[in-house]
Length: 141
Image (cartoon, rainbow, N blue to C red; front, side):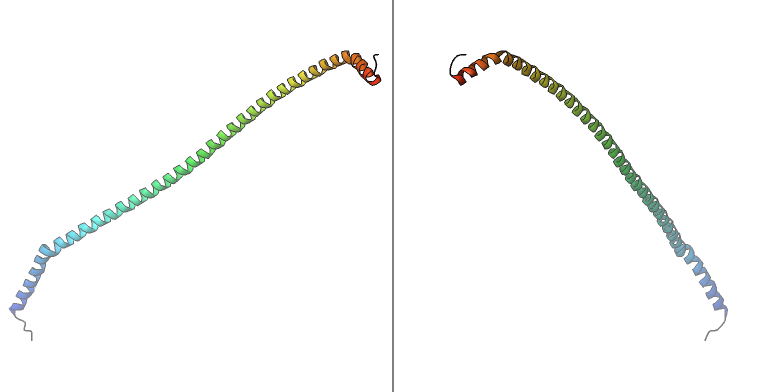
């Protein structure tokens, strides 16, 4: 059985002193380290979140840059294609004009040659007619 005497008050005082000493020597530093660790982990988590946000923003900026570069590239390609088509049309037009000019010269030359041959043949028609008549009749005309 428990008896209440002066040793009980000494034991209570001893217990309170022990709790106070343990709190100062053991529990206090452990709580302090746990609080520091919690603060450090919290800081690292905040740092991780900010880094993740920066990475996300960088990826979005990169994707946007690529999209803009593709758009600009396609626009530039269309411009180059249009310039090439215009140059092609101009070149084809020049070639057609040159070919038409050469064709006109050739037609003119053929017409002149045909006229010269016709004149020559007209001059020799009488001779040819006499030669044909001599051959058909078998005698000189």
